[in-house]
Image (cartoon, rainbow, N blue to C red):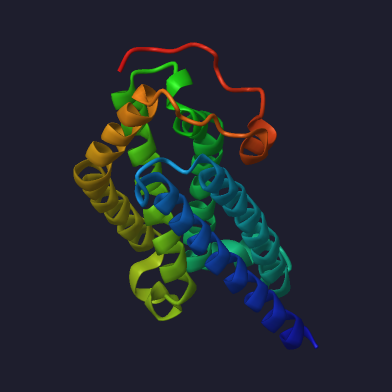
Length: 213
């Protein structure tokens, strides 16, 4: 019976992971895939990532409970599990930063309190960290044969390399077009403000100051 429960928990975990990957892709498309930033789609993608992350935590903790009974000695003896917990914790912190700091400026660049170059830079950095983190999380899900070889330090070194590569690519390929897109959004006289439905919990919390690009 325990194996059957674990199987369904793993399926739920994989489903949450796929949902998160799809939501991240839709968020990228909302930012760069159209002539204008799609604030409605961007807001929905952000909320979908948050729910998927919650699903990953719930299903992941349930799997850990089944496998280890939450015994610290058993958890610490699994380097792949420790690496995955570390990566997911960092992804959670990054997601909170994206939702509370980065997303409001992207949803309405005309109200951004910082220069748009800074807004684009921090969005590119946070997005790169997110992409690298999710990619490594997927890799860790199938990396059990490498655990004896790499250990916790090796897995985290791979994560650091993935983040560094993603940051370089984001700075070269994402930051320039995103900065130009934000400038166009701020200059557009007919730019539509995001509806409160797209903002969700952030409705009414956007800053009301503006800064020159």
